[in-house]
Length: 228
Length: 228
Image (tube, rainbow over all chains, first blue to last red; front, side, top):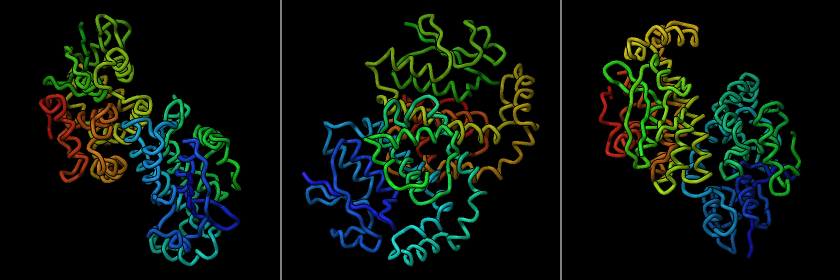
């Protein structure tokens, strides 16, 4: 069996995409071995199969694009291995958590590290990145990022439901991590790899949870170049 | 077997507590029959057993206080009936959803209907309610409620993760409702019973989901005096 995960890479080999981290954690959760194959934004088309985004999982020659589809693929194909979702209600949880992560983590984090991302992506991608992201934001990346100190308190406050939950259980998935953990984890790992800006206070219970996630599956997510 | 649910009642027999609605929906989900016994805030102490809040479930003489404890009690005692949580990951979902509901629904809804609540609670509770709630808010109930039109857009926007989730599945629990649905349902049912103020736009997908919840279990939650 061959499993290849096509992932986004920045300068200095930084594997930074939050969506790719979801898939890497899912593969590790299933106890699978895989080869990481790295691409710039510019190189995605060369993966083939009409893929236009990463992650893409190549499973014995079958290409599965989109992190959610990859999670469902792994859950369906490896049912005898630890469950990613924990059944239909747990799958529904992951759907909700994916949407919560999009609004409460991805959107504000992107604004807070926009210029840091630009500096650390593959140089070949910089013009594309600046143009597409500034069009989305309607303003220069640096100007948006310059407001991050003012954004930080609301960002941290917005994570309160997660913080409250982790008071009564070690993982969002309960006693053990599930894909519902890997969704916000991917967002924070993205920031940790691409920006020195500290999104979480040291004494925040979310920081302790993030540390537990970094230690999962042989600490492979901890052992990458990162700022915090 | 005897199941008695002690619930909070307002004027004109309105059973309005969002926490009591969670428990009522949980009992109905399990297909159980129960007797609803109603109390004002002032009457809670008369339930006995040192109980100071409702809901309280009296199961063959054993008192279980707190809506979460009631849900766990029902799940543990009636495992052969439809699961409330859907396994450990689904239970973890409910923990998260309870915290999300507290911050995204209960807190803003309370402010938007504070004076409406005062008008419709049992007259015997009014002084207690005004005093305790104005102390918490630091301002008169009517003054806080008067800002509701300005609060409404942010309230509706804050429900976006739930709205996105219901685009791909009929219930928060997935194909079928779970306790994760009953948590935000209880909050909206509270508002529906106690205030004419329309929290959800008619064309909001959340309105359609709320309608589906009202129809569950023989539509018993729909068939109570309410404003919308």
